[in-house]
Length: 134
Image (cartoon, rainbow, N blue to C red; front, side, top):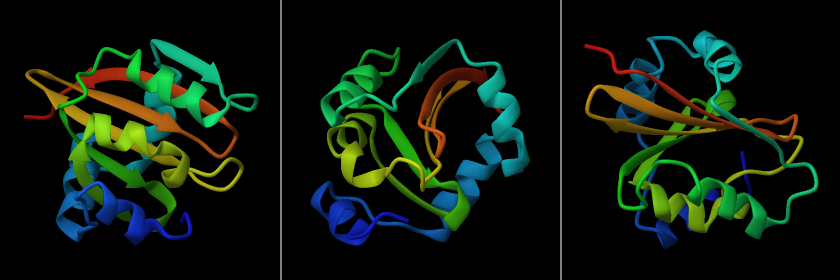
């Protein structure tokens, strides 16, 4: 988990909650074990090992998700999630994900589908659109 996470979340008007994590798991298909399969089906993939924080932010903002969409940011290994706008998470991504240590997913629900962005500890970012659960 990133240092100063609570402060970063407070800065964007978010806080973590168990219900946010439970909702994220539901949107991912009921289990975190689905994440590798979601990543394999990605429509967009980037190696972020040489990205600056601005490059990662630009990549996130180039995906087909509106900046004001409600999003869940999930620290997969920590069982922690917070809710804020997609743009708010993108603005502070360098304080939410650390290379080689964190796996973070940003999940946005659209009518009929769910946008899932995963930034993993292997310094790869993926964008996948999956079917929304009933």
